[in-house]
Image (cartoon, one colour):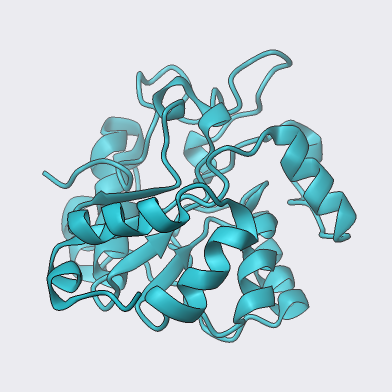
Amino acid sequence: MIPTPEHRTDPVAHAADLAARYGHLHGADLLHPLLTGDLKGRIALVSSFGTESAVLLHMVAGIDPGVPVIFIDTGKLFGETLRYRDRLVALLGLTDVRSPGPDPAEETREDADGGLWLRDPGACCALRKVRPLDRALAPFDAWITGRKRFQAATRTVLPAIEAADGRIKLNPLAGWSRQDLTAYLDRHGLPRHPLEADGFLSIGCMPCTDRVAPGEDIRAGRWRGRGKTECGIHRPAA
């Protein structure tokens, strides 16, 4: 079914329609009909090129390597992450990877000394992640995320298809377990993020990412001790 004009202007209705038709699918089975049909040319994959990112990147590349991939370069990332990005882009043949970052004028005004992450991590994420992503997503009606229910208590009821902030969001791996991800990476011979073997299981910006101890929540190393669990890109805009 081709989306009606009403659905094109109402992401909530469109998301509900897509969920009714495709919400029982996951992984590449969910992505294929949407990337080649309903959302073709109107959707981007947002990827951190973190420890599990190769799974979705591989799936999308297998369907259409020209799907835009948005990678927010905050200016505070591990060098290993940047090199891992370049390696996966070349390996998978991705042809439209975009790496927007913070607005230089905003960065000068709000974080001249580079220490905003320590004083106010929420404001730093807004400057370096939330606003750059909002600008990068402006041309798109929908985007793909790599969130999974097992990652944190805040994600346990994550749907495969949802509407948020005026756009459709696809979470093709919502119901996948860590074992599912590992099996997929192994089956396809995909390289791992170089920091994973050193205990970094969820990787963001270098100053705000710590190793995860055995038995801890997979995202326990993010903003450790700061009472913060999300960067803000998956919360309604203020």
